[in-house]
Image (cartoon, rainbow, N blue to C red):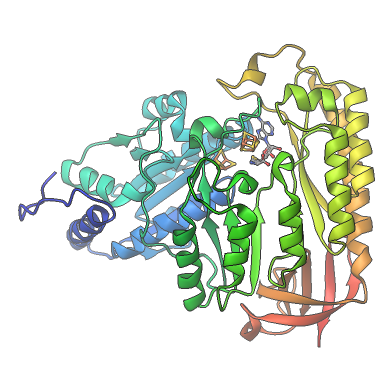
Length: 475
Ligand code: SAH
Ligand code: SF4
Ligand code: F3S
């Protein structure tokens, strides 16, 4: 596609995208002139940290195209939805939302609606949107978010609906603009996709096979972020412990952590997610020797029953998980362990749930997300027999939730009276005389202070534990 000046777009990335950002910026200015107001955009993000990170990149691209961010989705000229398809209720919620937008859209006929992300990697979702939601102008997937400006140009120049979804990833494109949601903390992708094929999970299908980024690129990004004032980085991957697998001469995840630790200005390092089957002693040792790596490991259990774990293709047993958690508790005593649990997997019985509750009690999780199993099209578990009834699920889910809450309340209370470093994230939503921040172990603390502390790390004495958060006092 050539522009009016007959310039030819560069063939290589990211130069090609900078060309289109420039072109889109001109086209949008013309459009703004016609509509007689400057154009705004809004991004709505569903799902996990990966999507949050992708949204920051797309935010960066739109910012660069000269658009202004608008807090209210309904008022924005350009709206982008970055979707998630991990469970069916996520999809239903999104369709509901698009439906409501259908009506509101009449008020802003010049609006451009874009939909991308994991749901768009499923052909039936794209079909449903094309057939039922005519307000959508541009669709793309998870593998080509960096092409946002190019797709926008295509739409602006043709006036037509544009859809571009790739069924497998292309090259990893570096150096695309990005805008942080918080100026003091940022996610950093260290790998994309997943090769684990847990039988319930759709991620490997919508995010593609596992690909690690070059360590050099990861470190460069951390250095750049630090120079911009970022204090905390969260290294992101579906299974960070397999970082570098299959790449010749690539360093391991614990080695990568050591490199990030050397980046001046970065004061805290987090990572997500750790698959229990791959969490190594090296990682524990590196954490032990580090003053920057936060004392928090998210270690999804999914089920405490070895039989169900096998059917889930998790590749560890109840005993192996317990042993690993014990090792973390012994070697890194201040570290919080959080988890994900699924209830209602095909063939699951109350005895399996007893095993899950046994693990919850033995490990005493600091926190847990509990999900009802949702069958995903194309995954092996979706065609497994023995789906438990809704009534059974409700009952067992409550049992699991009660156990989880009891344990996390116990764990949270352990820190009363201690002094912790807290990264202040913002003014408390409940009480404007307080600020809210996070301890290294991810627990939330509110304490009296003003907005000038946002983005700073302070020493805070924990006075009172209110269930799942603390009230503190700055030293
Ligand atoms: N890569 C991460 C998990 C990413 S998905 C890991 O393996 O640890 C986040 C969580 O969603 C999973 O840990 C799992 O508990 C839940 N989940 C994934 N697929 C699901 C499904 N089909 N139904 C219900 N919960 C699901
Ligand atoms: Fe899904 Fe399993 Fe991969 Fe996690 S490790 S993203 S649960 S397939
Ligand atoms: Fe959802 Fe995609 Fe993340 S399916 S959980 S947004 S990888």
